[in-house]
Image 1 (tube, helix red, strand yellow):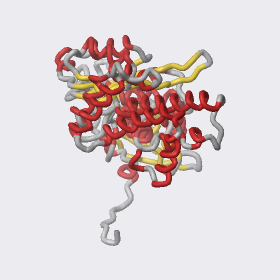
Image 2 (cartoon, helix red, strand yellow):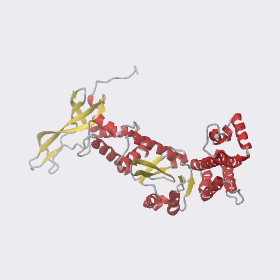
Image 3 (spheres, one colour):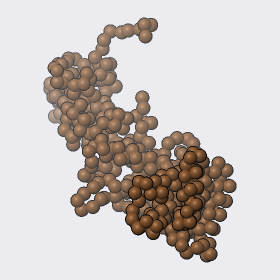
Image 4 (cartoon, helix red, strand yellow):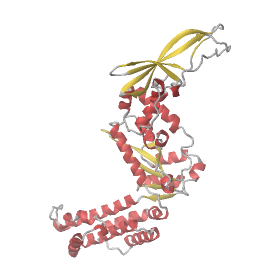
Length: 433
């Protein structure tokens, strides 16, 4: 730092006015705000009708909110020159280099607002307060710039071969929760070239919403889709099979393991009621080891293994023992490093739990077998397509949950969709300095 070369202070360069074609001619600083008087650096403009240079008719003032400096809202007091010509024409300087037409924010302020929203995760209210403008002024400027740079970009859907789809609640109301469906591009994750990105947010969570979105995409684009990662919702699977018959649906491992967890828990609760006639108490064997039962066997200590052995030694807990064994098989299949072997283990499990001679007392295991049989193709496809998982989709859903917390909730769906696309639509790389 001591070897730096210093130059004379220049307010125009410090406030990045030169990039707007402006030069600072004065300043007025207070404890609450800063006002910078500036003019354009370009030469006088000729008459747009006859091309002759006109007579100066003074200036008009245009005020623009600019990027804040020193934690104070900064305003550009822009003096726009006016001219008149002998042909009877009046005109004034073109100020589009400083701000869009009729805008109240300069290009620098819009860039700062986008960076604050996307990179710094500020709310629109805080951005508006820093700029010294109304909430709607800041929000409209951010949405319009996001639409120009991202939403209307025709190349945003290029190169997509792997999709992820999921739903979440975007608003809680007294009349019920309102849902949206998120469509994610998982191609960078599969190819290990970058993180997943949000492609679109659809109103509602239904087969029809996802199917309509797929049908609205061009056919050459649909033909490139190889696989779609999703949860166990049958509506998404049906929509994908009808519109993209050549694409393989992939069921996420998290949901399969969750089904096995629920199977084991349901069996444990049923046996608890049958043996003791009540819900579990803290000293009841089944209730006391409820978390141990859901732990992968490789992670169990010797003490825990002995406790499970004593638990299963009781003949009344035989059905829990069988359910626990099926659960461990599911976990082991997904944790097998060799995907071919993991697929074979899952196929063997599906064959066991769907066998016709399976004891009828294993109610929960038979119920799990029906579910696994119906989704067998999607479950086994996970082992053939490494990198295709709904995990990144769930991660983006988590970021959108955080976004709603920052904004203290949303009431307007178009605003929510726009903010989601700015937050997770791959816009960050464009804003990094």
